[in-house]
Picture: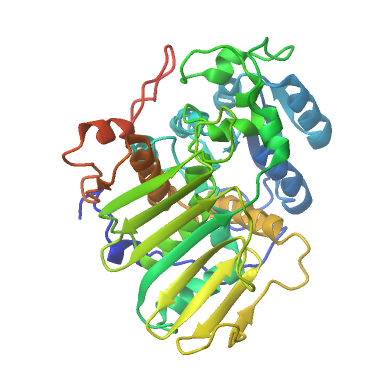
Length: 438
């Protein structure tokens, strides 16, 4: 099988361990049993700050010794909180340090792959936040680089480390709800007044001490605008893929991990119907995927949070010939095919005694990465699975941006017969930045 031929059979064979136990002790591996892993953190806000807080609480066999961020306020806070880390504005100084074993890359999406591949070339293992690449081309390059440099990679799709997600996959693959022919995925969230209030502002000078040109990096040159800064970058295609790509990837990843990947086509419709600010990504969108032997439907709704009683506002629904399984971060429910509306599920699994279950999943995902750095085993969300899990969001966005359905050749990872859509498989990189050659 060629390196680009990711078939259903090949992908479903990837197994996840059901032994999910948070351990503070080191695993046996290439490092000495008493050696502490030395970690660098690239990006200290948002997910970066979440990671270092969980890291300090849970992983006593490793320490964060360096941190970089282009916002001096976030950088100063991280150094005060971590205490063992030296500050750097330029991530390349961390990558160049010979005594660092691994790095966490927690930057905006347009900055994921350049430091990740540079770190691999410098002999470091990498935990990089999702998505695995700002474009499909970047994701494929990640797979090739991980193989060439023999590095351990973990993508931040931490749901794979959650026990109830692992159990769901096992039950579906064991045939408990029969043959799955339809999968529904959705995000139903209300208008976020706080975020909307931050968008649509005029251009201005960047915050004091911020190297804004470095923050833009490979993205197109433009004046600083707070609408595109920090969390808000999610809503602009120069830096991210919106909720369609940068959040829904968590659920898409679970679907393809469970069902396998053989996407043949996708069609997306939607628009900014409600949110009249300067964001580029839609507030309402629906995408339909032909996945060969099942269909997947994704609904993005950020103007109304109403859901049917018993459902969750972000979830996956697997529909099989014998039953239905609905799962979200708060647990999953199973129903028989003949159950009437309103019937209680015949099986329910909810995380018990964990006030911060999402944080628990992330800590478990960190733990899996650190263990694999020592053992050199494959992580739960390795480069290939991270690349594959990002495909639905990328393809749905491409369909949305060109305004029509597109075909996908999974074997060659191309969009045949549509040069405009195929052009969005990669992007232009502003000089002097470019993807490292692999």
